[in-house]
Image 1 (cartoon, rainbow, N blue to C red):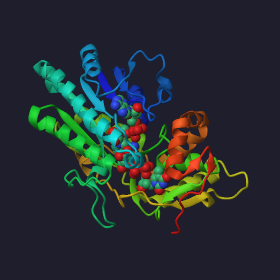
Image 2: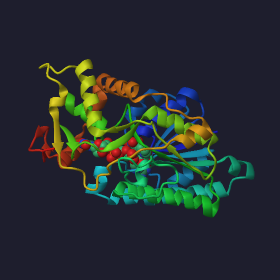
Image 3: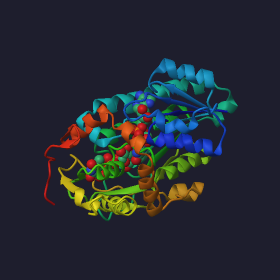
Image 4: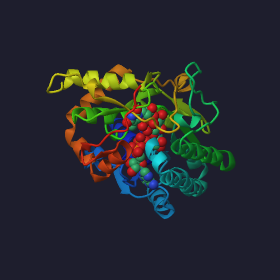
Length: 366
Ligand code: NAD
Ligand code: DAU
């Protein structure tokens, strides 16, 4: 038995593969294009593991995927591969359309043909698990109930629209062709190997570098945070016991405004690695121009997953964020290595910094 994972060198994918081998010897074929977000260092602990087969390539490359499916005969596919950063989708949506929509479509076509040729037992047991996001549901008002699996799709960014399109394709391949699919829609993850373009790792990295901590708008946007290993355990559980064709929302019941997240990170750094001048890190908080179309609030109702499949997160936000900050403090080399030229270009484009020095950030008063 083997599974094929796409995007397994990214943040969640690499955590998933590492977790997988903590509890299983079932081989994993890990197909990742190694875009700026993919990093083989995340998988360094698997060096020499004969059950981990890393393949650098595009999940939308039909010939390559067909060859891998024929060679390894996986019993399941877990599809993480995507462009994942909302701000990048605002600067340049084309990659998101190409990867998240066309790439997923190409993958589905290959899988349809592979699955169609299986015998009845193989067909019955096969699963295609598509990893998606709560952002497809759009934005909630302050007192709205959390997103259930029946919430209408109302994606607001090019990223979320492209993920929504991919979810619809996955759904359609089940309804039209009978492909045994499962979809998970998860809230914001955080934890080890999170690329420092996203809020939590960016704050940890900037704080230590003495740089501004850029908070968009008034910082009162709410996200529902889940420790990445809990997302991984949810995916494993859905893969194992989810009902074919069903959607499962995954969340940590941890709704927090961004500003509170930033204050928490600052307080942990004050405790674990105080500033040389003894001042609090929160002095570095800088309010900057808001993200265009910024969704105000996400919240996941994860009761279906809990009640039907018995899944619950293991971490609270307090335990998870402490582990996360500590991980970044313990892994300065990983951080240094991902801060390549491409990373610096992005930070310059998004925040107006250049060559590590601050040009005027587009600051706003709150
Ligand atoms: P990430 O950007 O860290 O990693 C994406 C990975 O996909 C990278 O390793 C990249 O190299 C790879 N990739 C990109 N294009 C590819 C292609 N054409 N072929 C093969 N590999 C390709 O993203 P992440 O945060 O780990 O997210 C993984 C998945 O989970 C995405 O589908 C995302 O939409 C979803 N998701 C993310 C979060 C979150 O908070 N990060 C929450 C819910 C859902
Ligand atoms: O909800 C799930 C989604 O969470 C995933 O589908 C996405 O792939 C993932 O990137 C994440 O999207 P967000 O846009 O919520 O994450 P991000 O870390 O970019 O931003 C979190 C919040 O923090 C958001 O409200 C924007 C804000 N923010 C972000 C950055 C990078 C800031 O205030 N300042 C920043 O510099």
